[in-house]
Amino acid sequence: MRIPIIAGNWKMNNTISQSIDLVKNIKKEDIKDKVEVVLAVPFTSLYEVKKHLDGTTIKLAAQNMHWEDKGAYTGEISPLMLKEIGVDYCIIGHSERRQYFNETDETVNKKIKAALKHNIKPIVCVGESLEEREKNIHEDIVKDQVIKALEGIDKSFIKDIVIAYEPIWAIGTGKTASSEDANTMCGLIRKTIGHMYGENAKNTIRIQYGGSVKPENIKELMEKEEIDGALVGGASLIAEDFIRIVNY
Ligand code: PGA
Image (cartoon, rainbow, N blue to C red; front, side, top):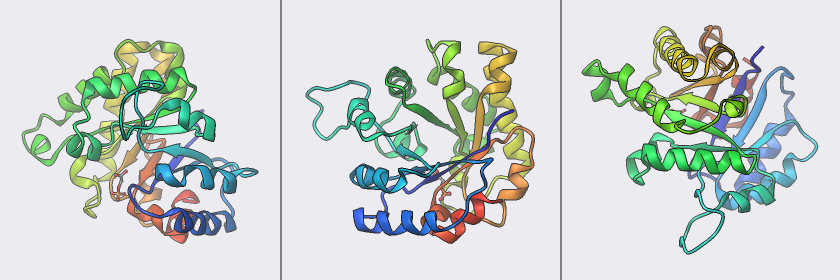
């Protein structure tokens, strides 16, 4: 049985005080106990948000990290720093990082390995652009991203890895992939994991869909066999919407 996992990705939104307000509002509501809920908040808010999550079942995530423990990397944040705060998950390879900050399959791979080494669970993002979908190469692109992201990573870590399929054309655009398309792509990712790691890993790995997930479309997405959760951007910034998504 794969436990559904719904993560809110706040992106570059919310100061510390705004983060605390949002967490307090999220905490006011009851959350279905069968869903794992994760909040991916800005670096500056992690420490404070963690204090407000203590005593709840909600997990904390960072949105990026460096792969080295420490060193001369001005402006970067290391897994050790995240670990001390008590971060459980880290989003790695979000398309916005790939697009605007030169994140490559190679750096994604290094970051996943570093996260796992420090007991931080990676939420690994993959997904095709509109152009790639129109050229009908989206399946090859996503398969390739998965293979390169996980290169050299042992089977024993599969239970700790979450993959988020996020078609770039659906992120923040209001255009959701149809639940059928999302299911097909998540199925393709699962099959790829099966080829790499075998049947057990294929059935264990959790795969999220992300891209304009809203209270109105979450149920239909979650009913699909291959979709184990969602990575939610915009709608995770409004407590009421996020809770409706979590309690789909
Ligand atoms: P969105 O973002 O829900 O605002 O489309 C999703 C994501 O980028 O993780």
